[in-house]
Image (tube, rainbow over all chains, first blue to last red; front, side):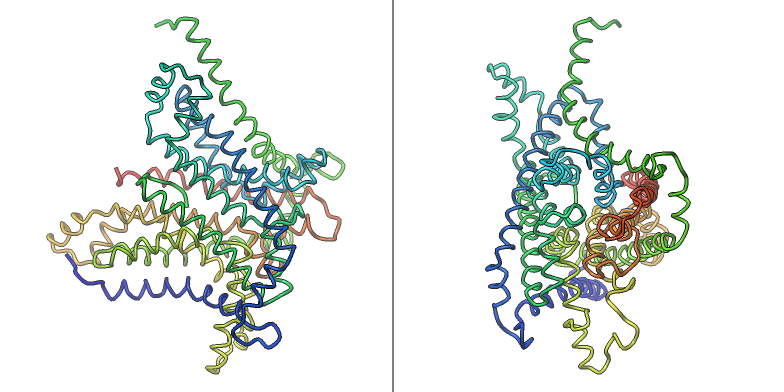
Length: 261
Length: 288
């Protein structure tokens, strides 16, 4: 067995680390520059973003949309996957196949189709970010929540849990909310965090549908204010980072086999 | 054997439990995708036509497809190669374990860090006043004086690699784990050099996984819109960017042509998926 890291490995690891860290470092340096002189170092860019009401409005919209997406996704998928695993195992490959379809129908294609189908739908749906966006984002999040929940359901014995619960007199609602959900909570939390990461980063649909969300705000700042853009970019990265690292840590603690990237 | 009537009925009723989910997927995924398919063959008056599809073979749409396929191929091959080398370097014996978990966690973030913020991170790095550009200029070599531009096809490829390499690392790591140490030892005992091991054992075993992963990378890059938009504001002629123009541009244009462009993407991505699934099945043979 080799005891020391091989020189070849060192070279590739350094290339990888440089490729990933240099753009982040450059963004950090940009975010600390003074807007008028271009010199380091000031926190004024961060203050400017935090004092910008549009920042908070866009954040609010994105978080509400994320929350709606999570609630709809879980309300649809948890009972369905439970039911399919319990009573309809023949439907499992069908749902697994459907979970691959969003990879063939990327956001830019999905939004074209959604426009065509729903352009004449009522304003509370089509013209409101809280209607149109969650409807689309549930589809974007579907594969990630599905793979996460599927791994969760595989790890528990739902037949025994259901029988035990029902022989103690519990109905379907009690069984799902008080027996099944607590047993798959890691998978549920992972799916929810991935959804937050997706919604806080989704630009294509929000931009084409002309809604002001956090990503479209970031784009607006990028085009208009060079150095504050560094601050808001780092913030976006930190949010993705927080969501993904929590998923990674949670997954490792339970040593479940999470699928997804 | 005949099933009792009651059991048969409960099975058919059980299907109702999956109905809300299936309706949702139909309404917001399958129906829109179907609408793209149908709409691509409609004219402005609602009649059937092949005009939209044949327009795809004219400029600028032909170039958009060529550029999109080129960018996807380049980033899949380069990203696939770099991702594999980094993944292998991180996993192989001798590399400290903490590096592997650090790279895996970071890749999980970076693979999802596409879009507008990523575009800006590279503008701050390699843009006209980017940190690295200024550094090189101070050394006496301004890349912008030598034909380089971040806001070009090459620039888009460099930026896409930021999420392609980590995606490759995540997807290929399980396959590298599946290369058993006994195989290498057996090969070495039989007198094989490391090169011969890779030529006759390592690469053939990994090949389905490598091809599958690169197909995934191709699709990932082909479908990307936000990163290229954030970088060039539509200056590079790619299919998703062109589709975006149909809905954000000032020009009142034929939406059915937008649907035809989207259909072209669907076809390319569906072909990718058709190639991916059997490769994936073949790759999983060794991890049993």
